[in-house]
Amino acid sequence: MQDSFEEWVEDIYLPSIDLNVTFDDLFPDVDVLTSCISTRDPANGTCPFLDNAYKLIDDTMQDLTAMVDTATANAKAISDKADEYKDNVYDAYQQSKAFYDGVHDTVSRLSLDTS
Image (cartoon, rainbow, N blue to C red; front, side):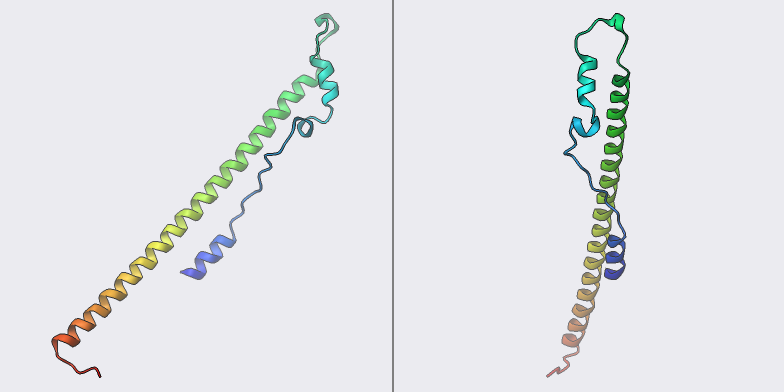
């Protein structure tokens, strides 16, 4: 059981999550974006970069959410497998203890000399 548990844990992939993403990372041309959202006459048209920035932010949020969901699911799977392993060890201990207690009781009841 221990070997299969260790092999199972080694096969789990947990993606790294970069929480240090800045707006500059998401949108390298932030100076262009700044000029687009500054006060200006709407008659001059709309900024073509603004829609892309919203899409990029939304896409990044979806990617981060998917990575967090994957990491959460894998952490839960590891926890569940560890609980299963712990329960199996406890059951094996209880069975061994019951066996040796039974042997001890039988030897005592039959007054066998074990020296």
